[in-house]
Amino acid sequence: MNKKALSLTFCTLLSLTAPAVWSAETEIVDALRTGQFNVKVVGDHATEIGWGKGEWTPELWNKLPELPEMSLVRGTAKFADAKALEVLTKLPKLHTVYFNATIFDDSGFAVLAKCKELQSISLDHNFIISGSGAGALKDLPKLKSLRFGGCTKMTSEAAKACAQLTQLESLQFFHMGASDEDVATLLPLAGNLKAFVVASQFNGELSGAALEHLAKFKNLESLKFGEVVVSYDGGLKHLATLKNLKKLELDKVGASEEDINKLKAALPGCEIKWTPPSAQEAERYQKSLAKLRGNS
Image (cartoon, rainbow, N blue to C red; front, side):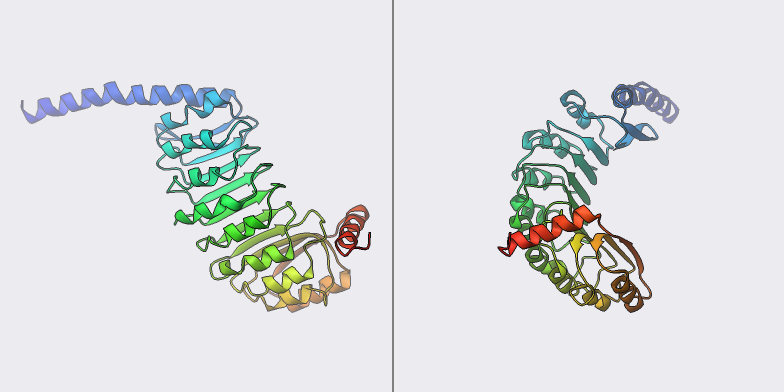
């Protein structure tokens, strides 16, 4: 067969096979969009699934391996236990996941650790994990960002496990009852960590003492600290030593305006956003603190 005939044969094969591949993906993309997910398509392949208004069903979830270029998956997945997470291991280019309301236990972290390209993991409102299994993620060398939001069953074991993840550049313990001790436990991350979020649900266990620990995270560029009551001398002053800090968000932090101004003067190159708590939230913090001290 001459070169011209070979070229024609090859082109014919492409015309027969490529549309078939895209046709299969099109059906899945259409189903996802019908389910009100946002889907990004590049060329002939679906590459990202965003939040939209949809919620994962087992039927749609199990079709994910048919999207070989998929790199980012988000959404609410109320059925997603550790077994369901195995589907993600069949996506060779997966680098980002952000899930809400999953039901996997701590064994699920070992499954996620099989997804070797993962760079970012975010988990909101999983009410089962303690966080003790998160140490398995140390086997993900590309993992840079880890978020836990509203995972209210997490314990101090979560901080101990996450302290092993020295590859992280960003960590979020948001709205989940973190403590001063948890922040101290995370000190092994100080070398690489550039962004940190910690908020306590006004549990009284997070205080100005945590800020003294955070002052040792010299490479922090972004910090969100929230749901506490603290003064300048009682903790805020320690942040003045973080000379690389570019953005500081004090979210629902009970402090005087005078103390916040002192902090701004001490960190002139840092953008500081301060939102005070409501009177009820501040009272809740004080009651939690009193209970911890045995004064209830």
